[in-house]
Length: 403
Image 1 (cartoon, rainbow, N blue to C red):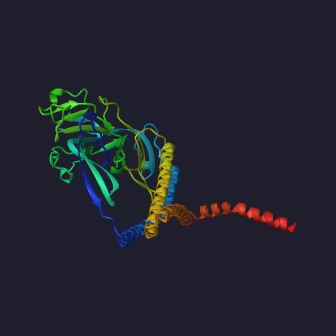
Image 2 (cartoon, helix red, strand yellow):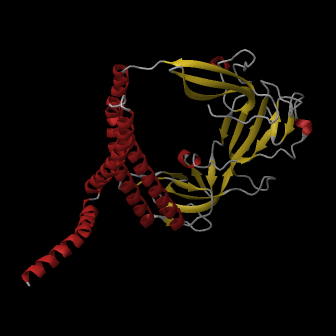
Image 3 (cartoon, helix red, strand yellow):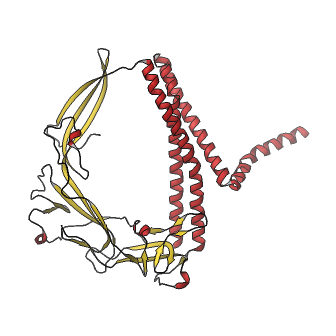
């Protein structure tokens, strides 16, 4: 684990352990490299799959968005349930509405929203490790420093895995669990939203406890900085103490102290009184929700932008997989000359340059192959444009020869 936050002026709770590393022989290193070679081959073919299929996914998504934009029907500022729009792709901007408030009876919290999240943290011991390798008396050694600190953590930390468990024991379970409650029925205007649309309502805001009535608190609870503490001394917590914070997404009640209902913009298929996913001819499903007021054109522009970002992100990921895979495959050459210091360093640099060049070239080739497979007409047009300068130069040379 990386280094954590420690209190200034406080003597750190830590200890050190030194281990002697076994220096593997040539055959043992060669065997380890062979395992890396197998992994590298797997990563290489995985990168080809990612790069190739990404082009098809990008095309399918872009085509579906273009199709959706050409067919979508905007319902205007006051959407109504109109039968002629049944089974059609519609766009609307409307306020969220739920029939009943969400509540947590254990903490007397009540919120009129689509989602209510309870986040639980426990005050626990955390172990941090810092290691350094060094040579001493011809031996390779590793010195590891183990430092222990107490922090609020949302996940349960198993202190049995600590190097020094004695004096740093954590409880084996949390008394309260984190949970997210979702309203059973969510509406926008006259329509009921599908689960896929509700899942996209995720802009959570922390529930302020400044105005929370202290008279509603149980005797073992206290409030500090928007947290419920399972202790009367929140500024002096002990290991095992619990604190709980609430947050909500999609306000859906009129005249609530938390603010007005959330306005959302939706693109989906109208099916009766429901909004559900719309399947395009390209095979992609359109079921889009943004937690802001947007026109249909703005919704599709945002989706096209996200598709472009995802496409370039997967291209970068595919190239990275190929680069790592080639490095693992060629590492065996470094192992073969590792006993010659100068040659070893030169080979190491050369292999990195080789992996960089080959991965860049092959990635472009795979992407081009994807374009040829999924977009043959576009690829042919780009190839013609790319070949045009060469053709013009060649024609110019032939004309000079004729003169």
